Amino acid sequence: MLPCDRDGRTPPRRRRTRRTGADGRDGLRGVSWHHRYQGTAIDDPTTVSCLERAGELDLVPFVHAYQLYEAENFDHLENALEHTDGPVVVLDALTSAPNVERAIDLGQRFENVRFDTGMLYSLDNVVERIVDELGPERLLFGTAFYATPLQYRKSATLFQVETADVSEPARQRILEGNVSDLLDL
Image 1: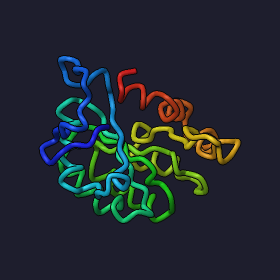
Image 2: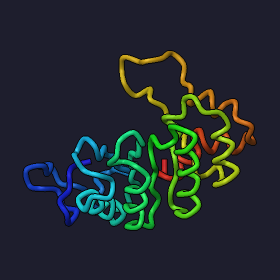
Image 3: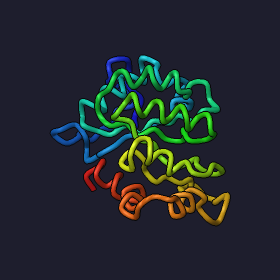
């Protein structure tokens, strides 16, 4: 995603030279950005304008909420979610037992929020908890296998989903159905 100003516009020095499609989406279905790398919090006005603009363009925002960073904590996330009604995928939030509790609480109050399994390494029964409390449609499979060199050989998050005590249809929703539906794939 390109940086946006407070009105959700891309500053001229950052604009692409080619034109986007008539809908402004340029073929995109979702956008993701790291707030901490941009030096802003999730609920910073600049970031909120990007979140609002994504909604206007019918793009699904994938928002990082890695709880070790103050700028991405649940308080900031909750403030940002007040500015959108469309679906939002919260990445990297399921890092500890207290964060899972906060995520479930947030998910109960914001029905548009989904969570990924990307940081679900060492916690047991989280998949079951999310499915029981929020429903299988609110959890998307994610893993940190996007970067090289790989830091491990087997995906702990895939193991968590594969061995979770949930129905097979729920497992398939988590592994592929939810993201396919969300992004019209």
